[in-house]
Image (cartoon, rainbow, N blue to C red; front, side):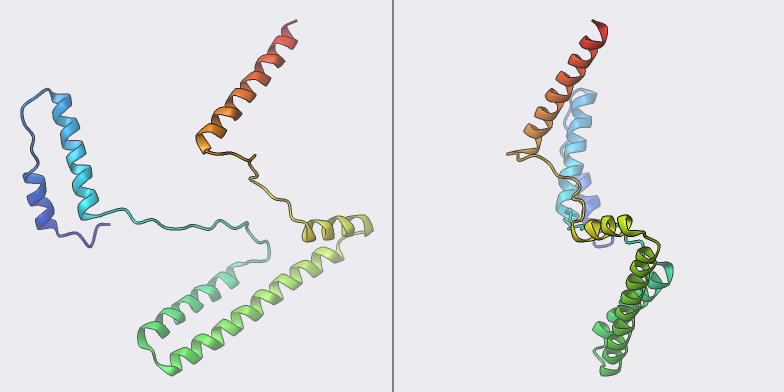
Length: 166
């Protein structure tokens, strides 16, 4: 939703777009580029950093609700600045940490209790040395890496097809 836009100025700028005569495709291209330029002026894109974390099996709906309540209390504390809100937020954060630690330890205890010796060593190895996913080879640019991977996979496909046909 575009809440921070001055609609009157945007309408005026759209009316002032210079669309001279020409072919239909030229007019459409000029109108499209003009609207993009106006949108960049009136509502520039904001970049956000998104951190992707793997799902944790011990995180349940109860913890999710407590976390939401903690965030509500944090916003209320920041907005009001009152000491009572700060204390409530602190107590709720402490409760959330305790619940999270208990859920995590219960999950691991149950998981360990179900294992035999061989599974236990495998589980501990996975916990100490987690599998790293999304590892790409060293590369200078993403486009170059994509091209290299495409060429190598194409070559492997061609060689496998030729060996099957012969």
